[in-house]
Image (cartoon, rainbow, N blue to C red; front, side, top):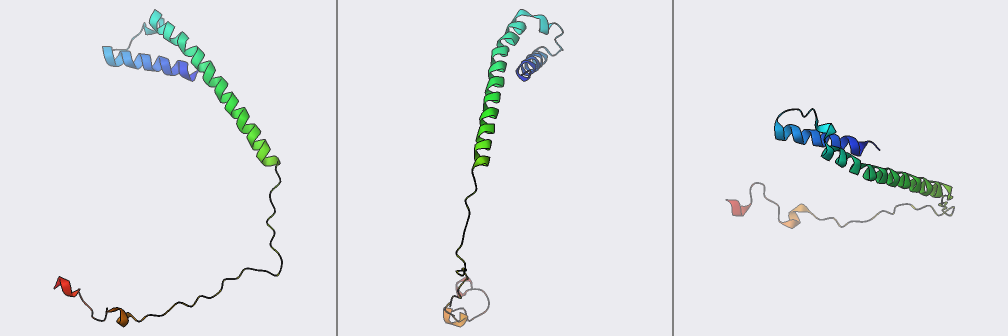
Length: 108
């Protein structure tokens, strides 16, 4: 919940260091800084509420999935699936026209 406030403060101070070239000592008490910090509060509260809502929804989904019984995978006995041999046609390499060794005839 404090992350938006800290992020805003760090960003403002870094911007002033880059712009002015020195560390701003009185930046935290300026009215514009305090107004920007106050405007971060509603966003921090909204992000906190959204995170709580998402965590609660994830918890409910997890409980619902855990409560369902698993589907049994039953195979009938005596009907084991075994791979069958497959007869592949045999071809001789010489029959494909690759009888000579060396580079292809077009490369010479």
